Length: 242
Image 1 (cartoon, rainbow, N blue to C red):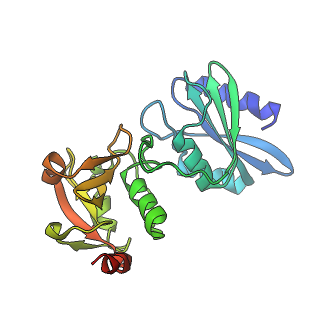
Image 2 (cartoon, one colour):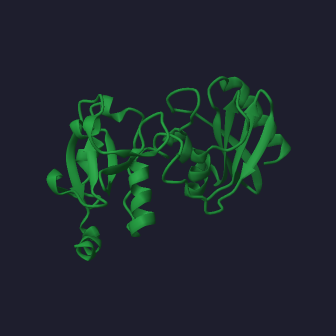
Image 3 (cartoon, rainbow, N blue to C red):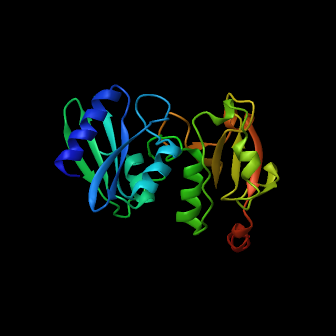
């Protein structure tokens, strides 16, 4: 990011403070241009670029970078920043505001740990953990689904609407196998939380606002479970374990 665009991005960060500012860098007619975008993320410590702004920037030129600010925090990238940077395949530019310290990160193959990862809805959340476990432990690529903060309060039921298209089918809670996915209803009118069954009475999950963890499957977690799901590609593993 050149000095002119740094100045524009910094002014944008000041305007949006204490919320995170976000924008895109494009190449337009051979020149690098900063395009400020609307942040539709919930809260002051995250950003989600408005889809309309992304499309508009893409029409104006080639997108070559992503910018966002860290209000009252160091410019050090979070786990979610690194994961999202990998997903975009683009360099990311982060500025701390008002300290005005810059950091640039590039895709380098970063993968967040399965246990102890930070929470960031849509990037590092309970479904992202399910996807990553399947990719890392079983080599199965699950589809990603666009999801907004607290979608379960907006009349949506993403897990029930999409588990079939992700390849899962319901199975018996009394016959859990390693890799089965448990859907749970946590203070919600619909199932809004998922965990991977690890065997030996343990689950791997990522609860909103907490670090991902392994926990004993029982008590509260068993009580709020609504569905058990199994992926057919797990069958070779299950057969070998019998």
